[in-house]
Image (tube, rainbow, N blue to C red):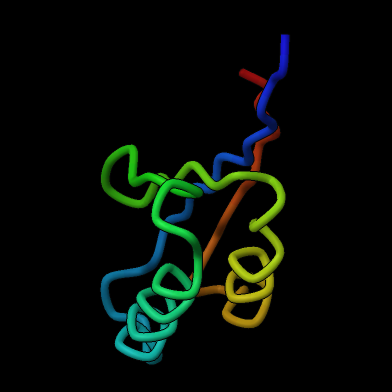
Length: 78
């Protein structure tokens, strides 16, 4: 039986983050570059991304990481 590996990303972005708009514009771009069935929004700031396509998502979060953004990723096999 074939299993798919997923990465669950979650983050907390401060309400008054200086680059909040930049973050969401780049998040939208990152999602538009992914194949439609390779990701899903679980709710709020929780996204499930096929592991094969998680690199760009991870890079976006790393670029923004700092006191205004805390994020985590978890590997899931389903």
